Length: 124
Image (cartoon, helix red, strand yellow):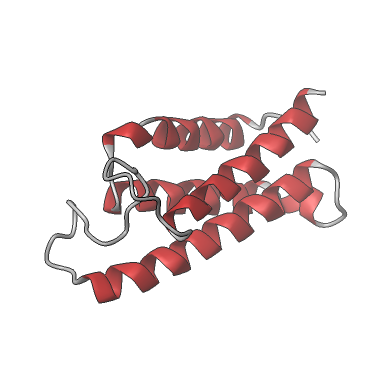
């Protein structure tokens, strides 16, 4: 049961990143903004937007592959830790580049995913 929940969590954690590339609401406090970066203030918006699309795509694909592996899909079940690691690292990069204080849970979840990978949990 825990393994299936972890797989669902990986998938959903990947999907939540689409908030950065989906249409934005009028709310000025909306946290998923890619038009500026506190980490890279010198990078223009015309570069940040495509960078966000590439990062989000890689994150969603990585976490989806990892989730399928946790669910037991052949081949992926043997290597799911690799895409989980890639997704978590890219998610951390995304959170750093497009930081918003409301998103503190994201990096914490990424660190938890990396901890699971390092400790070998869950067992296949």
